[in-house]
Length: 203
Length: 101
Image 1: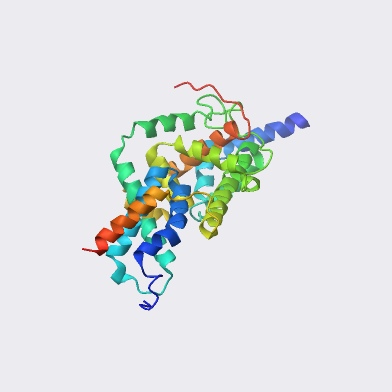
Image 2: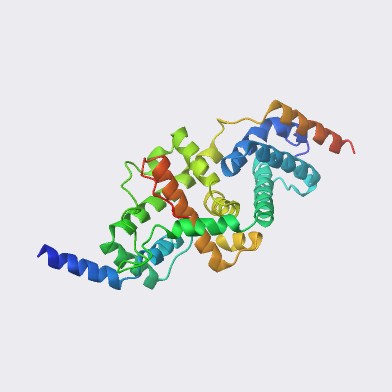
């Protein structure tokens, strides 16, 4: 660490220099302003506590982001441990509803609920704030455990093995949870962004 | 002739793994490299099923868009959201306090 560069290694200065970056980083993953602020605060405090471990090989921002990533995992671990499984079960039925339940085409797409043609794909909507607002609303509708796993896998790009270990999920369950989350998100975007029809739920 | 082709289409689809199995495999391809046999199952099924083909395109496109969005956010220095002054000052005072210990 370059001890002569006092500003760079002054934790008080970090808040002005890196606070907004860390806040945006976590807000785009958790989408809750209070939780995001709490995690940024915890990150700065943890960084101060462990400042002696900072080798100076990476930038302060990279180091702070690594601490924040662990805080995000801790947050999701806590959330998925605290909440009941009831919502997970509800989503299971909704996802299975898109396929015929009986007859010759049992387990094939129900033609009233199959994927519609999308005018443009999500990659074309990258710059559209409303698209992402819709996406986050859909993400909020997932059960907390599903949201945690989907976020860590797709937004944090964590390997599934690590998610299984950190969130105490079996390797067979994680594929099903990710699949159901994607199916539910796809359907929600289709209704709320692409203007697809809402099918009647039989729950 | 058309009828005959439809019959062949339906027969092939019926003898392929059903859609609910295929969509699960499609999702898995986003997280892991599936064995050749599984990838062939998806390919074969999608030859006859436009629903799964559409599902495949849409979830992959969504997956890619989310990745790209996160990259943009992580690389950006033009922040759309800001840590409130109140919280920022609170963190600074906490750090001050900890440093004074």
